[in-house]
Image 1 (cartoon, rainbow, N blue to C red):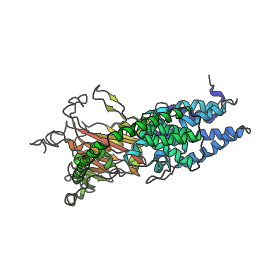
Image 2: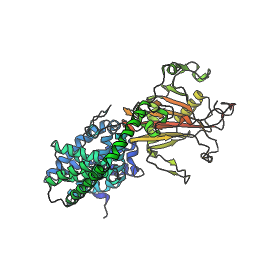
Image 3: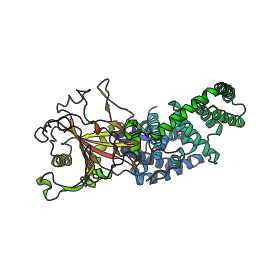
Length: 548
């Protein structure tokens, strides 16, 4: 079908030009910065929809109700786009609306003969979020649920810490999360979200879904987790509502057979179980007496504990050795009269924070330069050696060179003055914006001995140090954590943290393995500078022993 531009209202041309700039984007859910553009696009769609309703007085009442609801929502959202999308439920529902629900509306009114609204909507939908975006946002919610130990009802009611725009999930939203988990053979989350959908239905929430559909998924998910009695009970409940449900009839017979078989097996082995139970009780008592040290906990658990603010607490003696100071880097002329505020964050590895190091005006300028070129962040594939996307790094990033703007050159010079390290061999300034549940799981910044060619193409040696600017506060989550040592550094707008990745000898410091925790509520902007070995020979002389 061919659409002529002559038939579109004049304001469509401006919107189309805006959409053309969006067409280069993908993976919307990985960057809150890019998702804000979608809110304005959706607001324009609502305006178009309301004009359409006025022109078509006989339009269905269902369309009118839809427009009113979306008009109110987008008006609130666009007053504070980043704050609104900082709530993960709002971000997920935006992906769901634009990928699914607007398409349903298009089908509803497609029989209309007027070109304005339908033509505009059809063209714009080419640039809407995809199934991948909707699924990615849903999986991000599940990731947040696990990392921060949130129950489904807490997320569904939107009762998250630090939220400014509370958002409630409908039965359909909960069902959608459950279905996505089911498609991933994730029966644990399938059960949680189907149970939440059922709970809201039983509480009287109006929905196009019925209990039978939800119970069908719920009973099967519970069965797959080995809980036969509960699966049987839910199946019986389903059949009370729909006695002719064929799959439930078959499941009922199968579950009863399996449960009877299980009980028979248990009865035959009762004596053996009692003896084994005595041994296990003794072992459990021994285990309780010897609690696992933090160092023996799997890295994933340590990472999630630190993200929640749990884990190792620094002893008072170690804490007493951390100081705050005014810092001029050994009387650097640039900071002699106006030294910067510096505070120790951790002792080993030594992590230091610089306060008030970027102004709000500078931060906005950096974001303005970076936003048009934000692209999905990539990682090195150890098997192919090529850059690729990964679920353990969910963000978008952009690289800003010294020649982009005088501000970038001033920032680079500021880092050099405060660290005393050469910036000519450092990588360009990388700006990153984290999306829904945005994270970067535990990793090293430096190249290890098992990957000798990690930065060979740069010709500047290994990454000797990392400088990280925080360009936004984060309402909840988003900490930078070091699982091996139990350190956690929380985002604070306008500050920067610095640490060495290599010892003075050039050997890698494995205690610097770190991660960016998922953003629970809020919008996280950071920028970082990876500083390399070459050029530092006289600025940071080599140490005489391996760990100096």
